[in-house]
Image (cartoon, rainbow, N blue to C red; front, side, top):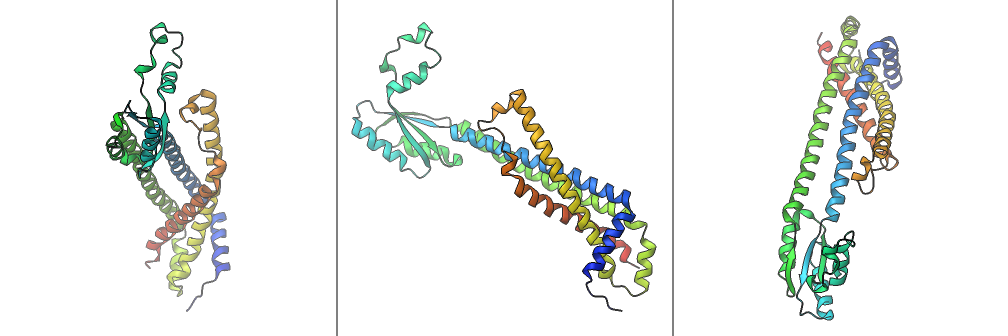
Length: 298
């Protein structure tokens, strides 16, 4: 007895099974929704944390203090040398007068600082790097240039930012992987419960000569449909939760922790929808495939 791949039949049987086992179908979709929202929330949190750390990295600089005997031409040449270093994103010359103004900002009314002479300050170059992991190496290259009398660099702080970023990325990846595995396990067992009530039907089909594929495909389609439904519901709920959380942070003032605010969902919705649809359908299909295996051994 041979059976070809009948898409219409398998889809019809999958839909019929979903309707016939409404409670179990609802439970399966609910589990997919819950797992996808948890994974999505952790991923969005990690994405925003990475942006926040990136902003902190951009603000991280080191200063090169210029030899006081240098002329304007020599200072210009030194600045160009610093800019030419491979890991330097920008190098800005700051004259001593501007450095004094920045230092006195907010302290204008404090008599202790009012009469500080310009000679206390030195001409300097403010340097930002491209890759923070090479921060210390870049500082070593820059401070070795002729004309650099001294420098100030918080290398330990920069390396700490790198460590935090790498740890947060690794933790988010680990949590997503664990949640994906747990989701697959839960969905497989949820669908297995629905399949258990049809074990006699499956056994009869097998004894009548139905192939494993012919028996399995309706369940796979059922899982695909449940996964698709769960993914769509999870996407819209995630959208609402993310928007509400962003608004709550804005109202509380916590949003000020991020210079540019949280990443707008409008810039993320397409990849999130794609990932949810892919994850939902894979979890549903694989879960169904795993659930039906034991019942095919007749």
